[in-house]
Structure formats: C-alpha cells, structure tokens
Length: 155
Image (cartoon, rainbow, N blue to C red; front, side):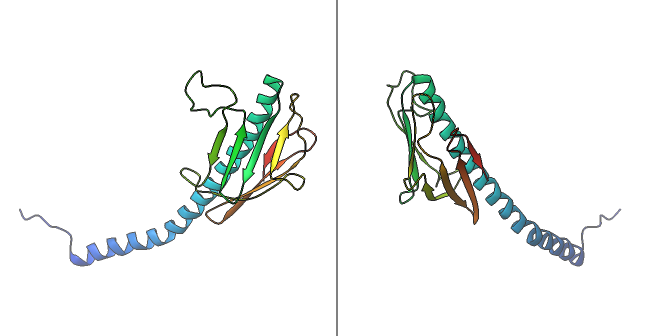
C-alpha cells in the first residue's frame, strides 16, 4: 500500500495561512506587551511610593522618593532594596531603574509641587501631591499621588 504525502499546493496553502495569522497576531501581541509593561511599571512606582509611606510610619522617620527623569531612575531614601541581604544596614537607599526587563519603561517626568521628589514625614503624611509619567512601548501611564493621604493610583 502506497503512502500519500502532502502535495506542494497543500504545503503552500498551510504556509500562507500561517503567514496571514502571524501578520494579524503580531501587532496585537506587541500592543498587549506594551500595555502590560506600562501598567506593570506604573504599579511598581505606586507600590514603591506606598512602601516609602509605610516605612516612614513604621520607623517614625521621614522617607523620600526622588525621581531622576534625566537618568531614568528613582531612589527610595532610607529603605533597603527588597533583594538586599538579610541584616542590611538601615538607611540604605533603593535605586530603581525601569528601563530593563520586565518593564522596559522610560521615566518621562515627575512633578510634586514643582519638585521631582516626595517626602513622607514620620506619620506617613506627604509634603505634596503630584504625578509621575511613564512610557513603555508607546503607552503612557500616570501615577497620581494624593496630597492629603499620599495614596498612589495608576491611570
């Protein structure tokens, strides 16, 4: 009994179908990844602002989050990085760069009453409200910090 394989026409139809599906899916995937990265970067910034506020309350000491748009980073002063070694000395600063994986985001601007930093006092009260603007893959995200409570939200 002879075995029948695929004809050249059948193979070309399968390849053409795969090419069409890929052409439709690729832009949607890229858009989805841009949305994911922008949202994740915004949530990271909002989470770090909340961390600084909680650390200020817990330690009854001020904590400052300084944004440096020119160099694409921000610093949480007086809070050790989450991946620091156990027993790391207090007062160590956490520096966050969003340009690498998984965020691949750019820090566009930070404005807290004309300054690029927000400071929480020992009770967790912010000295000003403001915004931080991030862009990842052409998608823009704004992190807003309420001046009364210091609560950070992502738009």
